[in-house]
Length: 330
Image 1 (cartoon, rainbow, N blue to C red):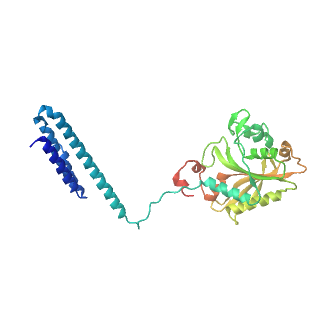
Image 2: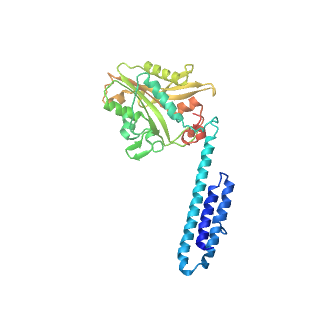
């Protein structure tokens, strides 16, 4: 039998076997071995190529290569078609009563949660929100707030200096100076934002934290109004039954001044939460307000301190470590 006739018979035989293939994966491998294996029928035809007349070998070799390519392509297409059918059949038999996949959801950072609550409380009693520069000059951060040149807060051990006269703000109180320079009284604002202190990092201190400054300026503003505002805030934040006390204190930019504590039953002690006081007349003079006409009060609180008390967190460093085990609790 001539090689050309054998090529034709192998082609027809391969097609017949491939068409008879069922969906059983075990049936397809014998077909591949029979025709495309190293000792398969196509390989046997190549071994007979040497018996063909020399002038006919190029044409015969071309036909054999076409046969091999055709069979390989048809075999691969059959495999792909069968696999697709198998996957489709598998999909139609999925148990739709099984629970779906669940994906983890993120949540707001505890500092952001407390900061939002603080803003909501003060907005509910007429305060607006203002923001200001985190990098500021010495005048707005210190001097205009009645903090003299010799004050320890100006020391490099406490403050991050960018240049001789430029600092990372140590409090958000700098924004009250900007506000009073830009706006005529009356005004009523809270100022949330990040502040920076050159402090050793420990369970109770960090080199940056968040603060909310508050300022209210109007005619005939009394210290008793300040007390009422602070008591309202504390009871909204920690509950109506919380015990509060005001302690006389000192701040360069308020006079008189006080620190506010709440009673902690678990520790059995008073814990400081914020500082406050009536705006010092010298501060009004620095921004061009007449202290004989205008009075006001100011307060400032650390958001981390509020969050630690509210959520009973014992280490401020947890807020900045990005530990999902900690953050996922909120």
